[in-house]
Length: 232
Image 1 (spheres, rainbow, N blue to C red):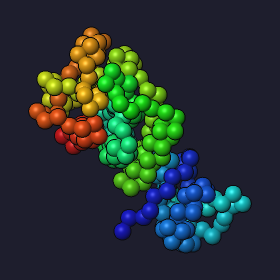
Image 2 (cartoon, rainbow, N blue to C red):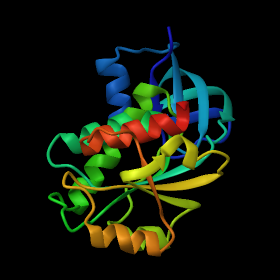
Image 3 (cartoon, rainbow, N blue to C red):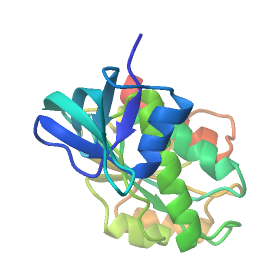
């Protein structure tokens, strides 16, 4: 059985690594781990360490893990920069949970003409916490932050690699990403991108792509796009 994963701010070398109070509480309480039990640590920057729980606690509640070895996982290719409208309510959490296992290089909220959910510092912090939890659950060593909100045209102009805008009538996504090292994928709100937004993005260099004939909700479109790119 695989070991439980816990997040630490930094992990590059073997030796004693301290997991923060909240992680320690989860390890000793909910997971019922004790001295000598095996765990896995990750820092969200690709470093993964295998270690064992010790009986050492700090005054701030941190727990010492004796890490025997640390490795760094390679990044998946292409690097996928997801620029996406954020759905309301719990669906925003579903979007993050379903995309993180496919290793997005970044996630940037889109502010579109038809957007119904706008970002706030509190929502961004919540989604980053959900992203970390999804990394733990899926054994994904690369996390990412939630970037500041941008407009579709601004996203294309600041894109990493080729810009692809998910919109009816586009070429198949799997064909558009073939052979690329980096790609920026734009996914609009429930009502879709406006004609003006599509025209502005294409004028800035974006390529229109599609996932088939059916219309998908935001979170499903995001996870479907990530899975097509990663799995084919």
